[in-house]
Image (cartoon, rainbow, N blue to C red; front, side):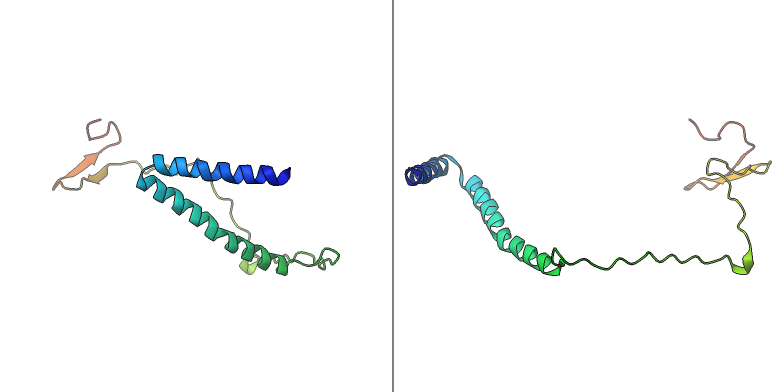
Length: 121
């Protein structure tokens, strides 16, 4: 019984392949064949990777020795303590006075006193 089902499945696959081959263009067939051959070429590579990785793993009954983690703490030079850094949301205040802007492509410098921006919005 199982042999009859296998033969029927193979005949169905061959018939389906013939119908698809007649209906599709040459470009579509080329893409399908390329994908099939690419997948087929990846099978030996996958088996090779599995074989290499399985050789590196220790046997199931053998355990690797546990080693405690090594922590290295370097003291600050001269025993100095670091100063606290300001929060990134805090910006230093700009000194009061007039600011000079140079616009690329312009010969003149723009002086600005801190009110509205000198360029059009």
